[in-house]
Length: 286
Image 1: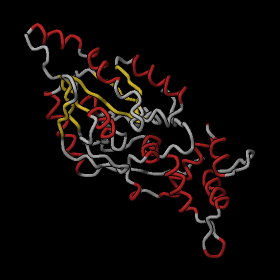
Image 2 (image 1 turned 60 degrees about the horizontal axis):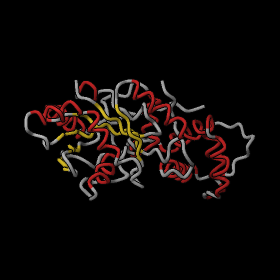
Image 3 (image 1 turned 90 degrees about the vertical axis):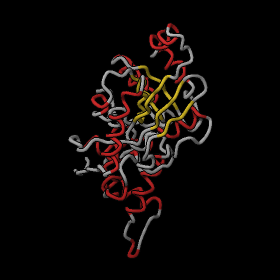
Protein backbone atom coordinates (compact mmCIF):
# COMPACT_ATOMS: atom_id res chain seq x y z
CA UNK A 1 0.00 0.00 0.00
CA UNK A 2 1.33 3.43 -0.98
CA UNK A 3 0.80 6.79 0.70
CA UNK A 4 -0.92 9.37 -1.48
CA UNK A 5 1.35 12.11 -2.83
CA UNK A 6 0.48 15.20 -4.86
CA UNK A 7 3.43 15.81 -7.16
CA UNK A 8 3.53 18.77 -9.55
CA UNK A 9 6.63 20.25 -11.21
CA UNK A 10 6.69 22.61 -14.19
CA UNK A 11 9.51 25.14 -13.87
CA UNK A 12 9.42 28.29 -15.96
CA UNK A 13 12.08 27.26 -18.47
CA UNK A 14 9.79 24.47 -19.71
CA UNK A 15 7.33 27.03 -21.10
CA UNK A 16 10.18 28.49 -23.15
CA UNK A 17 11.29 25.01 -24.24
CA UNK A 18 7.76 24.13 -25.31
CA UNK A 19 7.62 27.29 -27.42
CA UNK A 20 10.97 26.39 -28.98
CA UNK A 21 9.71 22.97 -30.02
CA UNK A 22 6.59 24.46 -31.58
CA UNK A 23 8.59 27.07 -33.49
CA UNK A 24 11.09 24.56 -34.90
CA UNK A 25 8.71 21.78 -35.91
CA UNK A 26 8.46 23.25 -39.40
CA UNK A 27 12.23 22.82 -39.86
CA UNK A 28 12.34 19.06 -39.27
CA UNK A 29 11.53 15.90 -41.20
CA UNK A 30 10.89 13.58 -38.26
CA UNK A 31 10.81 13.32 -34.46
CA UNK A 32 13.10 11.13 -32.40
CA UNK A 33 11.46 10.65 -29.00
CA UNK A 34 13.59 9.21 -26.19
CA UNK A 35 11.70 7.42 -23.43
CA UNK A 36 12.78 5.57 -20.29
CA UNK A 37 12.29 1.82 -20.80
CA UNK A 38 11.56 1.42 -17.09
CA UNK A 39 8.47 3.65 -17.40
CA UNK A 40 7.60 3.71 -21.13
CA UNK A 41 4.12 5.15 -20.65
CA UNK A 42 4.88 7.68 -17.92
CA UNK A 43 7.99 9.00 -19.68
CA UNK A 44 6.09 10.05 -22.82
CA UNK A 45 4.88 13.63 -22.81
CA UNK A 46 1.23 13.43 -23.95
CA UNK A 47 1.50 16.94 -25.43
CA UNK A 48 4.26 16.04 -27.91
CA UNK A 49 1.88 14.68 -30.54
CA UNK A 50 0.09 18.02 -30.68
CA UNK A 51 3.39 19.91 -30.63
CA UNK A 52 4.80 17.99 -33.63
CA UNK A 53 1.73 17.22 -35.77
CA UNK A 54 2.15 15.04 -38.83
CA UNK A 55 5.82 14.28 -38.23
CA UNK A 56 6.88 10.62 -38.49
CA UNK A 57 8.36 9.26 -35.28
CA UNK A 58 11.17 7.09 -34.01
CA UNK A 59 10.82 5.98 -30.40
CA UNK A 60 14.06 5.30 -28.59
CA UNK A 61 13.50 2.93 -25.67
CA UNK A 62 16.52 3.97 -23.62
CA UNK A 63 18.01 2.33 -20.52
CA UNK A 64 16.96 -1.13 -21.66
CA UNK A 65 19.93 -2.43 -19.65
CA UNK A 66 18.00 -1.46 -16.49
CA UNK A 67 14.53 -2.53 -17.67
CA UNK A 68 12.73 -5.87 -17.50
CA UNK A 69 13.57 -7.60 -20.80
CA UNK A 70 10.19 -9.31 -21.25
CA UNK A 71 8.29 -6.10 -20.59
CA UNK A 72 10.56 -4.11 -22.91
CA UNK A 73 9.72 -6.54 -25.71
CA UNK A 74 6.00 -5.97 -25.13
CA UNK A 75 6.40 -2.18 -25.07
CA UNK A 76 8.45 -2.19 -28.28
CA UNK A 77 5.72 -4.23 -30.02
CA UNK A 78 3.07 -1.85 -28.68
CA UNK A 79 4.82 1.25 -30.02
CA UNK A 80 5.42 -0.40 -33.41
CA UNK A 81 1.73 -1.25 -33.61
CA UNK A 82 0.98 2.48 -33.28
CA UNK A 83 3.07 3.22 -36.38
CA UNK A 84 6.37 4.32 -34.83
CA UNK A 85 9.77 2.84 -35.57
CA UNK A 86 11.44 1.62 -32.38
CA UNK A 87 15.07 1.18 -31.39
CA UNK A 88 16.22 -0.15 -28.03
CA UNK A 89 19.32 1.48 -26.56
CA UNK A 90 21.72 1.45 -23.66
CA UNK A 91 23.61 4.72 -23.88
CA UNK A 92 26.16 3.69 -21.24
CA UNK A 93 27.57 0.97 -23.48
CA UNK A 94 26.31 2.43 -26.74
CA UNK A 95 24.36 -0.73 -27.54
CA UNK A 96 21.60 -0.17 -30.09
CA UNK A 97 22.42 3.51 -30.65
CA UNK A 98 23.75 2.91 -34.17
CA UNK A 99 20.33 1.62 -35.17
CA UNK A 100 19.14 5.19 -35.57
CA UNK A 101 20.74 5.56 -39.00
CA UNK A 102 18.91 2.62 -40.57
CA UNK A 103 15.69 3.64 -38.78
CA UNK A 104 15.92 7.13 -40.27
CA UNK A 105 16.51 5.73 -43.77
CA UNK A 106 13.48 3.47 -43.40
CA UNK A 107 11.26 6.16 -41.90
CA UNK A 108 12.20 8.81 -44.47
CA UNK A 109 12.58 6.56 -47.51
CA UNK A 110 10.16 8.61 -49.61
CA UNK A 111 11.83 11.88 -48.56
CA UNK A 112 15.25 10.51 -49.53
CA UNK A 113 13.93 9.37 -52.92
CA UNK A 114 12.37 12.78 -53.58
CA UNK A 115 15.66 14.47 -52.73
CA UNK A 116 17.42 12.23 -55.27
CA UNK A 117 14.87 13.09 -57.94
CA UNK A 118 15.47 16.78 -57.26
CA UNK A 119 19.22 16.30 -57.68
CA UNK A 120 19.85 16.64 -53.92
CA UNK A 121 20.93 13.12 -52.89
CA UNK A 122 22.92 14.29 -49.88
CA UNK A 123 20.41 16.80 -48.53
CA UNK A 124 20.27 16.85 -44.74
CA UNK A 125 17.60 14.85 -42.96
CA UNK A 126 16.64 16.81 -39.89
CA UNK A 127 15.37 15.14 -36.73
CA UNK A 128 14.18 16.79 -33.55
CA UNK A 129 15.24 14.84 -30.46
CA UNK A 130 12.59 15.24 -27.77
CA UNK A 131 11.75 13.76 -24.40
CA UNK A 132 11.00 14.53 -20.79
CA UNK A 133 13.87 15.48 -18.44
CA UNK A 134 16.48 12.89 -17.50
CA UNK A 135 15.63 10.13 -19.99
CA UNK A 136 19.12 10.24 -21.50
CA UNK A 137 18.58 12.43 -24.58
CA UNK A 138 21.97 14.13 -24.33
CA UNK A 139 23.80 10.84 -23.72
CA UNK A 140 22.05 9.38 -26.77
CA UNK A 141 23.13 12.31 -28.94
CA UNK A 142 26.70 12.18 -27.66
CA UNK A 143 26.93 8.47 -28.48
CA UNK A 144 25.67 9.16 -31.99
CA UNK A 145 28.01 12.10 -32.49
CA UNK A 146 31.02 10.29 -31.02
CA UNK A 147 31.81 13.35 -28.93
CA UNK A 148 30.39 15.49 -26.14
CA UNK A 149 28.04 17.46 -28.35
CA UNK A 150 25.28 17.82 -25.74
CA UNK A 151 25.46 18.54 -22.02
CA UNK A 152 24.69 15.56 -19.77
CA UNK A 153 23.81 15.22 -16.09
CA UNK A 154 21.91 12.91 -13.77
CA UNK A 155 19.83 15.95 -12.79
CA UNK A 156 16.73 16.93 -14.78
CA UNK A 157 16.65 20.22 -16.63
CA UNK A 158 20.28 20.60 -17.77
CA UNK A 159 19.65 21.16 -21.49
CA UNK A 160 18.14 24.66 -21.79
CA UNK A 161 18.71 25.89 -25.36
CA UNK A 162 18.48 24.33 -28.79
CA UNK A 163 21.53 22.81 -30.50
CA UNK A 164 21.95 21.45 -34.03
CA UNK A 165 24.31 18.47 -34.16
CA UNK A 166 25.56 16.96 -37.44
CA UNK A 167 26.17 13.22 -37.63
CA UNK A 168 28.12 11.26 -40.21
CA UNK A 169 26.11 10.99 -43.38
CA UNK A 170 23.13 13.21 -44.05
CA UNK A 171 21.51 13.26 -40.60
CA UNK A 172 21.27 16.40 -38.49
CA UNK A 173 19.77 16.41 -34.99
CA UNK A 174 18.09 19.23 -33.12
CA UNK A 175 18.58 18.72 -29.39
CA UNK A 176 15.80 20.20 -27.28
CA UNK A 177 15.34 20.70 -23.53
CA UNK A 178 13.38 18.11 -21.58
CA UNK A 179 9.74 19.15 -21.31
CA UNK A 180 7.05 17.85 -18.98
CA UNK A 181 3.39 18.80 -19.23
CA UNK A 182 1.87 21.52 -17.03
CA UNK A 183 -0.26 19.33 -14.73
CA UNK A 184 -0.06 15.68 -13.75
CA UNK A 185 -3.61 14.36 -13.73
CA UNK A 186 -2.43 10.82 -12.90
CA UNK A 187 -0.36 10.78 -9.73
CA UNK A 188 0.95 7.26 -10.48
CA UNK A 189 2.57 8.75 -13.59
CA UNK A 190 3.99 11.62 -11.51
CA UNK A 191 5.32 9.15 -8.97
CA UNK A 192 7.00 7.07 -11.69
CA UNK A 193 8.70 10.22 -12.96
CA UNK A 194 9.87 11.01 -9.44
CA UNK A 195 11.17 7.46 -8.90
CA UNK A 196 13.39 7.71 -12.00
CA UNK A 197 14.65 11.24 -11.32
CA UNK A 198 12.70 13.15 -13.99
CA UNK A 199 11.43 15.48 -11.25
CA UNK A 200 13.78 17.30 -8.92
CA UNK A 201 14.22 15.55 -5.58
CA UNK A 202 14.35 18.92 -3.83
CA UNK A 203 10.60 19.43 -4.23
CA UNK A 204 9.68 15.93 -3.00
CA UNK A 205 9.08 14.19 0.31
CA UNK A 206 11.89 11.69 -0.19
CA UNK A 207 10.89 9.32 2.60
CA UNK A 208 7.31 8.98 1.38
CA UNK A 209 8.53 8.61 -2.20
CA UNK A 210 10.98 5.85 -1.22
CA UNK A 211 8.35 4.09 0.89
CA UNK A 212 6.00 4.13 -2.09
CA UNK A 213 8.77 2.73 -4.31
CA UNK A 214 9.29 -0.07 -1.78
CA UNK A 215 5.57 -0.82 -1.93
CA UNK A 216 5.62 -0.91 -5.74
CA UNK A 217 8.72 -3.10 -5.89
CA UNK A 218 7.25 -5.51 -3.36
CA UNK A 219 4.39 -6.24 -5.80
CA UNK A 220 6.45 -7.57 -8.73
CA UNK A 221 10.09 -7.63 -7.68
CA UNK A 222 10.00 -8.56 -4.02
CA UNK A 223 12.92 -10.99 -4.38
CA UNK A 224 15.15 -8.08 -5.48
CA UNK A 225 14.56 -5.95 -2.39
CA UNK A 226 14.58 -9.02 -0.14
CA UNK A 227 18.03 -10.00 -1.38
CA UNK A 228 19.48 -6.50 -1.52
CA UNK A 229 18.24 -5.29 1.86
CA UNK A 230 18.14 -8.61 3.78
CA UNK A 231 14.36 -8.55 4.17
CA UNK A 232 12.75 -11.88 5.16
CA UNK A 233 11.11 -13.59 2.19
CA UNK A 234 7.81 -13.92 4.05
CA UNK A 235 7.63 -10.28 5.16
CA UNK A 236 4.19 -8.84 4.42
CA UNK A 237 4.81 -5.21 5.28
CA UNK A 238 3.71 -1.81 4.06
CA UNK A 239 6.12 0.35 2.09
CA UNK A 240 7.28 2.47 5.01
CA UNK A 241 7.72 -0.65 7.16
CA UNK A 242 9.89 -2.20 4.45
CA UNK A 243 11.94 1.00 4.26
CA UNK A 244 12.35 1.00 8.03
CA UNK A 245 13.35 -2.66 8.10
CA UNK A 246 15.90 -2.13 5.31
CA UNK A 247 17.38 0.82 7.24
CA UNK A 248 17.64 -1.30 10.38
CA UNK A 249 19.33 -4.14 8.45
CA UNK A 250 21.86 -1.63 7.08
CA UNK A 251 22.51 -0.30 10.60
CA UNK A 252 21.23 3.17 9.81
CA UNK A 253 20.47 4.38 13.32
CA UNK A 254 20.48 7.86 14.82
CA UNK A 255 20.47 9.05 18.45
CA UNK A 256 18.29 7.00 20.76
CA UNK A 257 18.34 4.00 18.45
CA UNK A 258 15.81 5.55 16.04
CA UNK A 259 15.98 4.27 12.48
CA UNK A 260 17.35 6.75 9.90
CA UNK A 261 14.74 6.25 7.18
CA UNK A 262 15.80 9.43 5.37
CA UNK A 263 19.27 8.01 4.72
CA UNK A 264 17.73 4.71 3.59
CA UNK A 265 15.31 6.56 1.33
CA UNK A 266 18.15 8.36 -0.46
CA UNK A 267 20.07 5.11 -0.89
CA UNK A 268 17.04 3.18 -2.18
CA UNK A 269 16.31 5.81 -4.82
CA UNK A 270 19.97 6.05 -5.83
CA UNK A 271 20.29 2.28 -6.13
CA UNK A 272 17.08 1.94 -8.11
CA UNK A 273 18.09 4.73 -10.48
CA UNK A 274 21.57 3.27 -10.84
CA UNK A 275 20.28 -0.18 -11.78
CA UNK A 276 21.64 -1.88 -8.66
CA UNK A 277 18.31 -3.61 -8.01
CA UNK A 278 18.44 -5.38 -11.37
CA UNK A 279 16.20 -5.06 -14.41
CA UNK A 280 12.94 -3.46 -13.34
CA UNK A 281 10.02 -2.03 -15.32
CA UNK A 282 7.28 -0.32 -13.34
CA UNK A 283 4.57 -0.36 -16.02
CA UNK A 284 2.78 -2.90 -18.17
CA UNK A 285 1.42 -2.09 -21.62
CA UNK A 286 -1.86 -0.23 -21.22
